[in-house]
Image 1: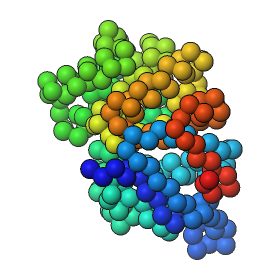
Image 2: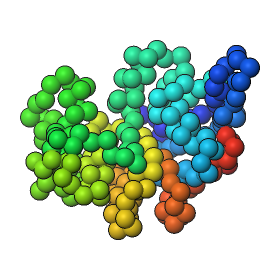
Image 3: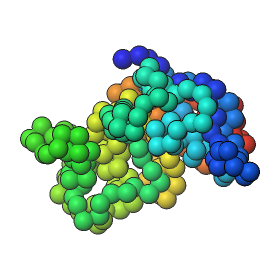
Length: 226
């Protein structure tokens, strides 16, 4: 695996292309992220952060430019190939955890692996338990996620995001709905994952104190990065 996990070159993103109200949101973006990098993404609302994250996460396509994930050029891939690459190379942690509240913590963590393999297995169950143990929640493996605290739910979401052993973790305001203590715990967990597993992390935040604890900070302002 290449050490260069993410590489954007001359990436632009426009909406309403070819229409009178066409607007370019991202302008000539160049961005590189290496294995194990822990990078904060900051910028005011409407600056283009979400659009940038959606492109890096293969949820949207750039209008111009190239995007490489683990050395693979993605802009010419069809939807099936993008879905497969996204499922194996990228994990997502959002501000709202998006867990299935009626399912247990263990079942939520197992789901990405079951989706990939088509069914459960003792190996999948063992890996899910190991991931819950790594986030300190193995004793709660059979508890319905909807009955957990916000901090616990977000830790389950981190474990789920790591299920496929992704090289890249995109964390979009993962601490935004948490109290200070829970936010620190989730941040420290992501930091530990990055250091121990070599996972690259893009951490979108409005919290300057958390951003200062990252290796570097990308500022997104008016669709440009600095």
